[in-house]
Amino acid sequence: MSQLRHSLLELVRRTSTTLPDDVTRLLEAGRKQEAEGSVGAYAMNVIHENIGLAQTASQPLCQDTGAILFFVHGPVGMDQMAFRRAAEEAVVEATEKGWLRQNSVDSITGANSGTNLGPGSPTIHFEQWDRPQVDVRLMLKGGGCENVGGQYSLPDNRIGAGRDLEGVRKCVLDATLQAQGKGCGPGILGVCIGGDRGSGYAESKHQLLRKLDDTNPNPELDKLEKSLVEEANSLGIGPMGFGGRTTLLGVKLGVLNRLPASFFVSVSYMCWAYRRQGVVLDASDQSIGEWLY
Image 1 (cartoon, rainbow, N blue to C red):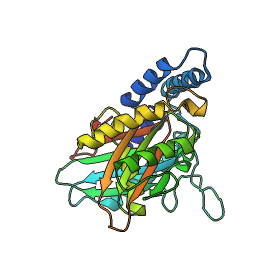
Image 2 (cartoon, rainbow, N blue to C red):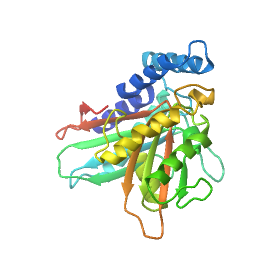
Image 3 (cartoon, helix red, strand yellow):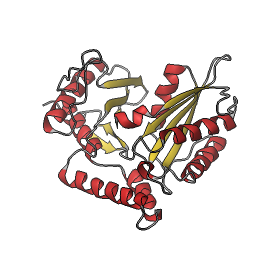
Image 4 (cartoon, rainbow, N blue to C red):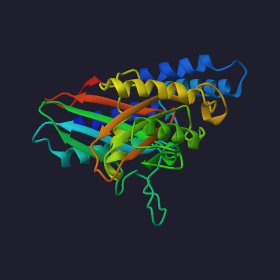
């Protein structure tokens, strides 16, 4: 096995079976604030037990191991075709070992490849940078949370949302209300303000690569992120929609330029099984030099 394939296989294993510390800290805080004996508290306790069992047994956190999304930054001259081959080989082996479920099906026939390979699976986003290292982030995004994402075109008279940050606020809260915990809440929302329909959704998922305890460099957006979490958690939707105080763990807002005629707000919903991990590969031998979450 090549060192690159081995590194990517370990990245897949850890992403599927172990939640990052920033996620577990907020899940534990949410568990402690639910009313004792409530259905919300029961749901958070089940989540807590599931996290421990998955990590101990090195088994997937969820039966839906989700869409396989790689975000790769590499130096000029990086062989992207070689990286793709190594990533696909790692995905096949991870599927054989049970770290990934057999989740990729033909959209026309419904046939399952059994390997998680096929058009668009895995999805790999490449971007060059001026550093010698390769930075690889992996997100495993389940179908349940993907189903309850949404995209708004402002102005939206249905929810009274105009082309401003107040309109963005109304979109995010509406998306939370529409989900009603069906995306396996408590959830995390990645949001893009602007862009076109395609780039907006892509950027909303890219926002989910941020740490939950980070600070938005735009002070106005940072304030809005925090207030949206507070507002969402006052709605009473709670874990899995069972009622309670923990509806969202975080909201992450990003911005892209837009055309004057368009104003999109794209919302990607991530479930409590917030499976994202990243590594920096050593420039000399492509071994894992650093874990990023």
